[in-house]
Image (cartoon, rainbow, N blue to C red):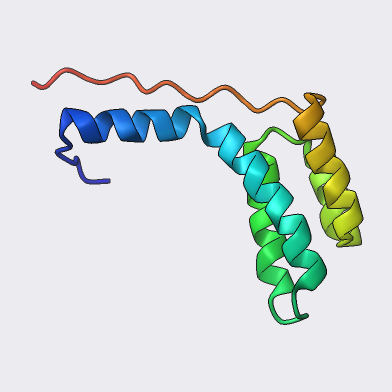
Length: 103
């Protein structure tokens, strides 16, 4: 990926986004439950793929992700959301990048 020149202000915005990403992901996952209830059959595969990505980012065990996707039931996805909100599923801590000094 190309090195980007960001201002200090932009760097702070990006940093805060990634610090708050677990909360944003939890919110997006809960929104997906409602969207899946209302979605047409044509849109559901894409929504389930998005739900899978978010669950994995939030640290949901792979076996549970597989079960949710296999059943494709929004009620079961809602249980995952409930567990994330109650703290039973804890987001992985963000990975820290080590900046290499310019040579």
